[in-house]
Length: 399
Image 1: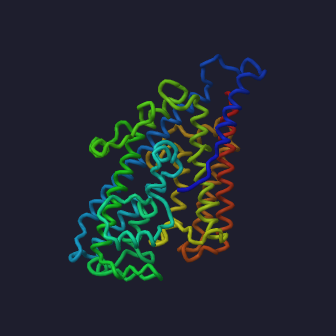
Image 2: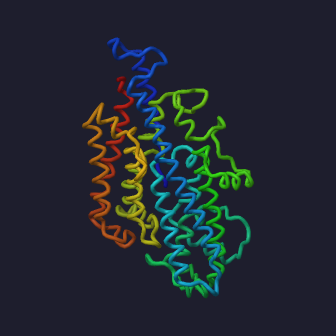
Image 3: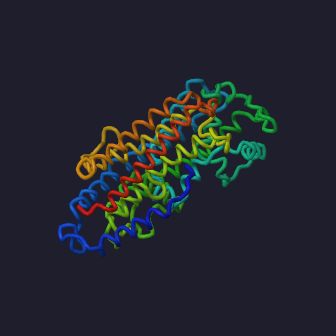
């Protein structure tokens, strides 16, 4: 994910809070210092549900699939690789990829603070750098994030939307694009690279999981401890703990519940942020001609699924959890009580964004000029605007 920061939002929130505390209003609207309104008490529960039912389950599933991906790649031994093995590892890759894309509505916290997102999900893949790396037969740690993460592994496992032929991984590559003649490389060389990247990906995902959940899998923490990789906030807590304790200056980076909610809905790396990125960057950059090479997941033909999973990420944040683990404490239910029109606007926008993205001709990499892209961009912008309006309402609501 790559996006433009929105620092103005938190500034506006701070101004809103100051105004609400100093302006004249009825006694019914002003709460004694330190006392939360009924709405904010409910939002505390929403934030807890956000951590327990959306963030943590998503990152746990992602960690489990990333671990499985690494193990399956390790099991591929050139000379004896079967097509079924390749198909299976490709399936695992797509499952891990789906979980990551369904996390992009909450890249606040560990993903941004530790720069994990650009480390494992930058694109387009720099094929020239990858070619140079494999040709140099390097045996040391890969530091160039343009050839790290999901998309490097994707290139090794997929071509033209299909799993690679086992014969290529047992022999030589057949990819030849100008100066990047990968036919000189064996499957063994490419898999050595892919395994190194998969291990780095797994460790990065462990860091996401453990940074948000103090009760994350011990074995995953042990890996991070052995690598001497930090996974706590500056206060020494998990990011989930600090979200749950919003308003407690001792235990949280969030001074108030409302500021925490703003960070979730409309701040940097938020639900609104990914809606904006899907429409105005992921789809619009290639569609408008601004950058026709800026195509996510081009080798697996998974772009449209990525985009839809990004919207599902917003959906999970809004409705209080991932499918099968949704809580009564949700933004959806909050707005049913306090501002049904704004809540409906968000929910209609989620539905329409999914619909408009699904209507783009597949695969996206071959249909970047499809006129339907304009409708999808417009739908994503409306979702961004609706979420921002919802965040603004919460910032002003004293009930």
